[in-house]
Length: 127
Image (cartoon, rainbow, N blue to C red; front, side):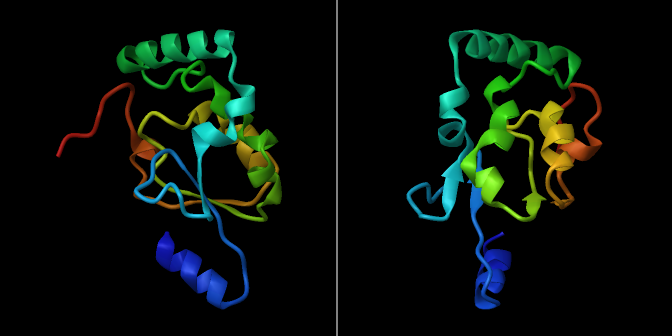
């Protein structure tokens, strides 16, 4: 991601990262999802997220998991972007049920190997 971002900048484009976790969270171009969707958090959403995250362990992807992230499309960062590149959506910070609305408003490239695209049920890939 960094190499792509650097190449884009050399060509005069801008690039930002929206991530679940980062080794460099203080860098200007890195935005943590939970910070970006902070205003959409609420007690009902938090409770639904906790329930959804627990259910997801047993039955697979659940629409209640990580509920505030359904509002990524309402953030300034999403509105700013011309193109979205997705990578590694697994890890407990992205709600796959947001993909239809997420991809309806912007061109999206989903780079594989992102194991969520081939994940079966609630199973976790084994090494």
